[in-house]
Image (cartoon, rainbow, N blue to C red):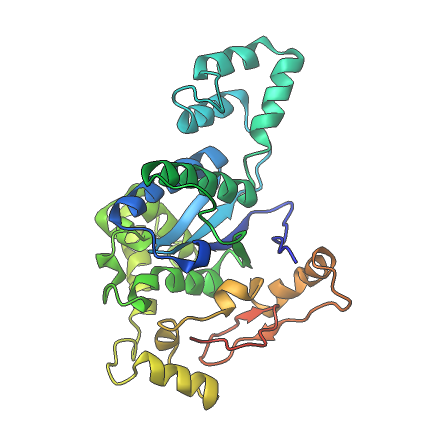
Length: 331
């Protein structure tokens, strides 16, 4: 059955989105990741979503985005965003930026239709992911003399409580993707993730990290100091005590978590694959999860309203999910 994302109205929403290549084939090298990275930022700007962090891997990518609850952008902003995605006319969008601007300025039915056509693609995580995946597929297939489907499925999404422990834990999990894959020991050394971009000085990536730790740095008014405090807090979460204990290898950690039903330090568990963060449907406090249980029941046609489920395996604090995971949670 086709999975749909849980919709939020009247307030900002944060989603963790993940998608994988067909058959999980490792297709992306540094060149492909760099093109995807640039598209990610450009399409986020067009779509009006904020990237909090991301990780681009050889056969999949993760992105944590905030979708503002803003209304339809004004004409000036529509023109600017159109120019971001279509600086030159294309076969699919033959109108130039000047033509779009003139149409909107002239008003009438044609202008209203154009506003609807553009605005429907903005402020929506599904449209953001659709545009990103389609654009990259066209580039990849043309560049590699390839045709056919590049992505294996519609993207997965988890609605994340947009502040505090849920947001910070999810961001750390995403940034640790290259560490879990054995590509580096510190995510700052992996250039294709939001954390590394922030450390390298990218203003947009630094803004995302500050948003993740907004409550923690809320009293710091200086932007540079706020980023330093956010970075310190993020590194403390990623490299908490036990995280780099060489005696706790992944296989042993999974055995302790799955077979022995034991507990490990949170920073250690984050170095394992945790399906709560990709298949849990909703991640947040029990109260946050409960708010959306009815919506999930209706959207997915469940007979009974689901209930919040606490995460196991570590001291997760107040974290809960709503999707019951019958198969293994860690891997």
